[in-house]
Amino acid sequence: MTDFLDEKRREITGRLTELKPLVDEYNRLEAAASALAGVGGSAASAPAATARRRGPGRPRGSVSRANTATATPAKAARKAGRPGKGRAGRRKGSGTRAAEALSFVQGQPGISIPELAAKMGIKQNYLYRVLPGLEQESKVEKKGRGWHPKS
Image 1: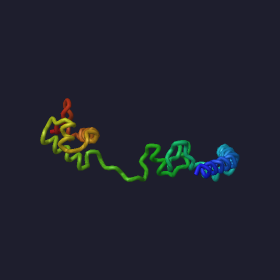
Image 2: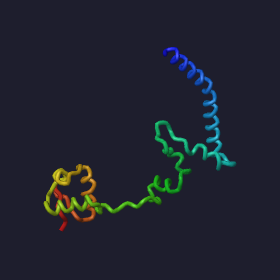
Image 3: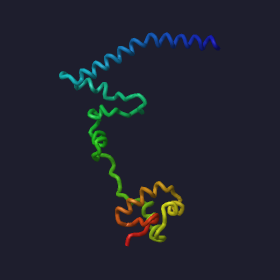
Image 4: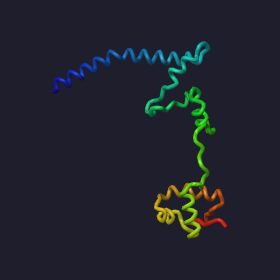
């Protein structure tokens, strides 16, 4: 068994030494192509090869920030902070949990978020996002640690 493993290790090492010069050449050519992409001429085809390149440690499908210019218009719009063609979100406070939280606050004015989370059976961090949205819509107000319905 050890003979087999030693043989495979030697084969892999030999193959790696064969391929190293080719990989180095590939990297040099790719760097030259990207350098020439910025210079006039037919730069339309050169960026297509490097646009899909992601940095080390980045997940598949992730494009580096330098390549956002070659990304699709919808992706570029989302990255720039503008709304793209994606699904529109709903208003804050329009969810069923927000309505449930509002009914609990109306039933027990001055209820705190930990108490409300225990009654609803959900985590507190969700309510720390929901209740300020209800406050912006003037449905509830915070007084001290408790939440009260807005009259």
